[in-house]
Length: 323
Image (cartoon, rainbow, N blue to C red):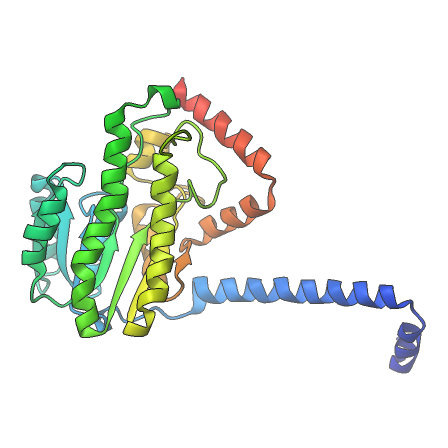
């Protein structure tokens, strides 16, 4: 074993630039180690917030399938009454009955809104505001969203497709948030979760699924949700309202199956239920997060790869879906 005094004397004899570079290397390793510890704490150890402390009701859009449906059941399990919003009245009635049968103490209200309709804004400002008036809406899950029906080049995208995308993903989220946040401000508490997309945040491009000329509708919608959430997080945190953008990658849902040919869950593609279990633990903390542990690992590797490799890979996947 080398004596410590010898090590100190040896270090003193080294050129200053070697000592500087060695110090930088040690600092860099320490920083990465701390980031890993932080990730482990946030993902697996940090206790989740008591969602009932925000209020006794939760509102979920796009609540009859996939992530929205999983959120509805999980929030009911947490003891929150529900306002479920979706475009399918039959599914709303069915899901409401299933939740009340499983959790008889939970009250459920349903409202049909087709967010791609020209009447959607008036439905939000009329029927939705009337329904939630007097309700202690503490949690809002803005989950409603659509994408292309399949891979296609820009010149193949019909105007109705990208117009509906903007109506649902941008206008729907904005108007529902505005309808709910006023009550949260009065009560001085609330949590808003906007479900974003890794398509415009994790990867640099999403060819054959985004309009990259003129309006850039899909990219705009995804980035809008992200920036909208982060801005509201800063604006309203001092008022007791926690705003968060959650960024999932592929989740095993009907939408993923039809658009991305996701046939079954895997380590990197969780079920909607597994995703929501992770998502619930992150509500009320960071302004933006990727709740599912495997998704965050994918995001890390995507962040260190050159953009041209990711762009080429995404384009090859899109072309395969054209076949």
